[in-house]
Image 1 (spheres, rainbow over the protein chains, first blue to last red):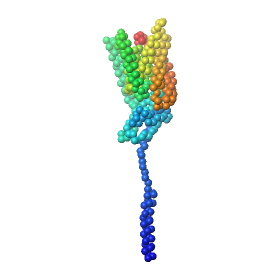
Image 2 (cartoon, chains in turn green, blue; image 1 turned 90 degrees about the vertical axis):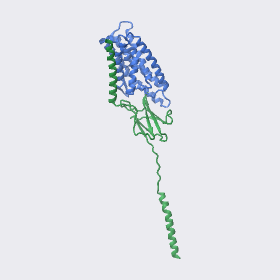
Image 3 (cartoon, each protein chain N blue to C red; image 1 turned 180 degrees about the vertical axis):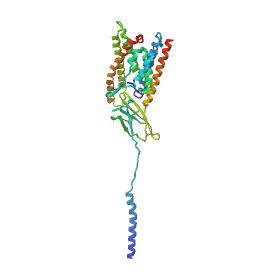
Image 4 (spheres, one colour; image 1 turned 45 degrees about the vertical axis):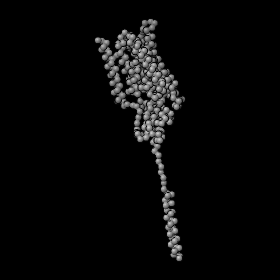
Amino acid sequence: MCMKWRIAACLFFVFILGLGVPIKALAHGAKIEYTVNVAIELVAAYDNGEPMAGAQFVVYAPDDPSTPWLTGFCDDEGRFSFVPDTSKPGIWDVQVRQAGHGDIVHIPIGEDAAVTGSAGGYTTLQIVLMALCVVWGTVGTALYFSRRRRA
Amino acid sequence: MHIPDGILPVPVTAAGYAATAAVTWYSLRKINQQENPRREIPKASLLTAAFFVVSWIHIPVPPASVHLVLNGLLGAMLGYFAFPAILIGLFFQAVMFQHGGLTTLGVNAIIMGLPALVAYYIFRLRKSQNKESSRKTAVFGFLAGAVAIGMSVVMFVVILLTFLPADLDVGAERVAIYALAIAHLPIIAIEGVITSLLAVFLQRVRPELLERV
């Protein structure tokens, strides 16, 4: 009789232990959720390389391109950043302006998102070559009409 | 000095195009009334090149950076040819240097072209009253160059301040616009001196180039 009680007590203890272990394991579990918030950093500079320090930026979300989604100022190096609402995929427009000068950059957010991008700007070599072509065109025009005048 | 795309509301840019079309038509009509309209084309063509290139050369005027415009020089040297010359120069500047924009081409042509025509009339004053002298050419050359760029700066500032969008920090933008205008004060003097020197030089070396203006 005494032996039965001992066996019963042991089984009960094992049962409680068996119940207890998973409870304890659940308490040590963890749940991680994540949402990707990609910050977009922009650098605004004039075409001579000088940063647009203190320039104002206006961000327009794709769902309402006429109402500013965010406004602010660039720092002394012409930098600023913002975290777009990823629930609004599409083309986000960012305008930077200072004293009537500035530019607009179109940033795709969503599946078409690109790591880097820029608005405007040719390399110096491209600009020099294009400028030479235009100057040659004007010189050619001048020479042509000078000849006609002498004839 | 060049207003880029996206700064002005669409009706303003459309009005700029309309005004530019009207002034271009009037200028071409005046050119066509000349005895030989082709005679001035080589000079106009070369000065268009100068106008086009000079906007790429930045002059640091702390805290801003500005560039020469030479619209007064074109007005004084070319007369009514100045407006189409500036229009063509602005088009190439917008396409190649991103100075200004295609939507604002009309507004920019008015900002820089109308003062050029004023410069033409100022420079013509040297022929009034007594005989043309080197000193009068120098003085009216300076006035033509300085007044034209000064007028352009005023028009640029007035247009920008009138059409400031409400969603900007208007106070900060206004301060930036005034700062840019003040940075152009040395340019007003420089353009006056350049126009004056070139006018006196041409009068001595090739006076026939200035006969018709």
